[in-house]
Length: 370
Image (cartoon, rainbow, N blue to C red; front, side):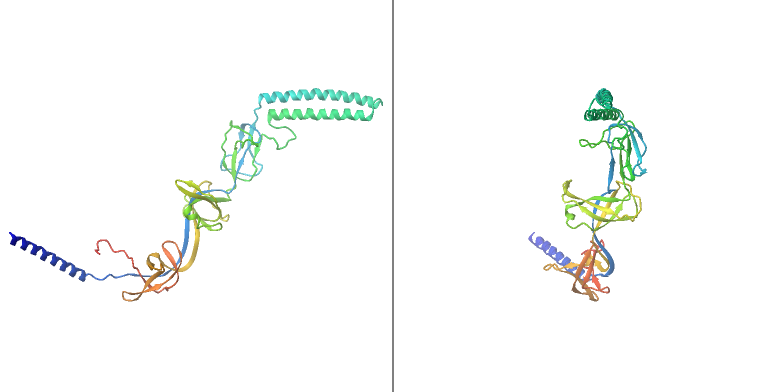
């Protein structure tokens, strides 16, 4: 029995030894790694960060009434272009019964006082012409008569304002005709005929009848993450792409970065704005989604290599590449890097256009063992 066990152990050792020899022989028969090379090329490298947002008018004007009432007519619709002074809507005033009665009573009271002062004035005028009273007494009667006349006229105008919303002599101070205050395009008409509207005053914003804007002055409104906001500054160029307009980008200039961020979905976002170039006459609808590439740096037609070719010294972290000096023979060469877009990086010093650079981290085809 012991002899059989001994034989089995010797057989196992012999098999293992034979396998090891075969493995070493196979490794020696493998071809050595052959490194490919690449040359530097001329590239335009743009370093940028992306912000998402919308295209909106630079300024929107809300048209609000200066009297309350019911919309009687609307003369515009969204998409129309209007000029300053164009008629937008007409309002029918629905007077308050209590206010209307008070105004009417005031007219009657002013009329009674006016009639009384007119009678007194006529009497005093007759006496003055006969020399019975002095000029001073006649002048006092004349002033009282004119004051009563003015009060009566004011009471009538106030009654007309309460009843109809306007009166003669007030011009545009109170008017049932709502007109455009600027030139532009009608973006929205949120009211319809029959809707009640409230006047704009110190205590109420009032009802918006129409929203106008100059669509030739558009801006990009977007947000950038807190990790990117430190890289940007006012004055940087933007390349804006609109999802609804294919194969076209718009130039813009970053002119606002919010000083305070807002938390959204657990991340701090900062608002930015960029004014689109007025020279581009392409019509862009307000509210369209857009992406803006903020150009952080640009290098035109510079010598560049793929970032994958760059190695870094483990101690100094200085960049270098390996340049071919012969057949599968390479030498280390220190380089100075410039602008990078994540794929290509500018090389300022260290290599030339004809140098063959080692692809040190090349990917082996699937199925080849190490």
